[in-house]
Length: 149
Image 1: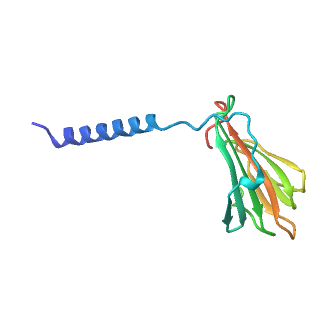
Image 2: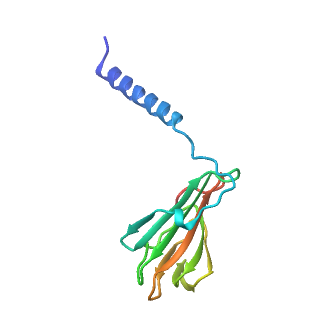
Image 3: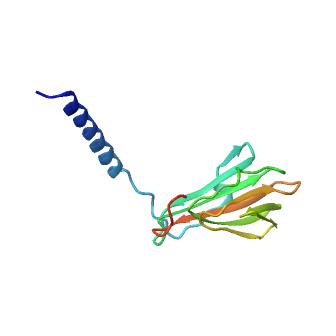
């Protein structure tokens, strides 16, 4: 006779098997090869703080994950509250002026400035000017990327 416990265990095991099989069949992110990404091809997504353009979110020969997006902040706006994450980021300011907070210290970054956000270190941004500020964000993961704190 099948008990209620046996039935529940069988259902849980079957669900787990279907989940694993489905996940295993999911395609991995594509491997990016040499490419050119033109500004005019980026789709603009309006946000509460300005706009966002997604460029790519892929793997490369040496990176488990590599993504790029471009954010435009309206004057005085922030994209989100200060935070931290395990991935490292590199930001390049295209235009405007950003106020950059990193681990309690604040700096200004104007056109051409390069901003590095280290793994799991607190950081945040604000448009400190009176015109829109646009910047590129590059984020990557490798086997060495730590887990979230």
